[in-house]
Image (tube, rainbow, N blue to C red):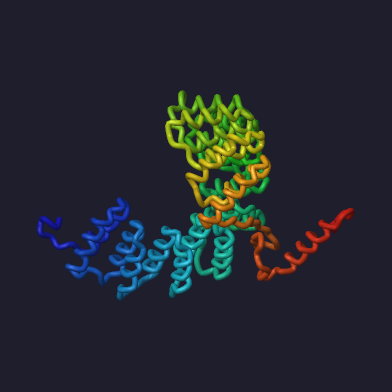
Length: 429
């Protein structure tokens, strides 16, 4: 169009920027940006918004922020584009600052912030943001919002809040959406309410492969391998073809239940009958399956024969199995592989340190401690969540007592002191 002598307008510019964003073509996007300046097309918010989105999708959020700051006319989409850019770059602090400074918000901006928190492993903040959104009541909660919140509930076991969202789903007639039902099944399954998850499954009018996979995953999560296999066979009987995620779930179920023969059979069936190429997750399930069965040498040989390079998860799985079955030499080898792949993984250093102490290898234990200090690796404190009266409380080991509900800490300290008393039994009413 440009070579033909036509002058671009804002619509063609936005289309070109959208293409550069989706293709992650930063150079092409910069060329289009130059045309915007040359033809003075930057006055319309839609053009600035497309520029912000293009730079953010190409990982250049600093330039996106400069574009935003130089825009004469900003609308709610401009703010949301910058907000989403920071979220894509995992800069939740900057995203929250943009969110708080927004002159107005809509369901898209709320959902972007909630989803960012949940995907960024800050589930409690995401759920609190949802609570705030509902309290203000200015925008209608969308399906995307509901699914993000339910994902957060499933991850931290916030069953009460999940039930509240379920009631909201019924009230707003969102129960016809397959994605919402899958998210509800995931919440109830991970919270131990498999009967409710099964009830939701049977009430669904249409069941796709993701519905079946979610139910299989729920049984796998609780080590109910036989139930997972039954659901898998029922899915095949219904004419649904399993996908790669389905096989990850059913192989995981076999692993957790110690069903070695069934797991090996399913892995071969996935490759030979369905023609699916195993991914790292499938190989990880098989290593875990062999390790739990005590076949450590076979697990090691399986890793060596993999057509793809094993990741830290696979070596960590072998390491755990070696510790359970007392193979310290193989555990040492697996632990060192994890450190090579993920040198910041504090847990592996601690495991190796304990291995050396158990084997009375004091010098090696000291070397691990020294290596940990030299690399400035710090032990990540343990974290737990407690749901109380609809609120999610987060507890971190060694955390100072600054929480509004400090009484909980006082009670826990009292329990700890009493439990240390020799010859005394502690009964809690």
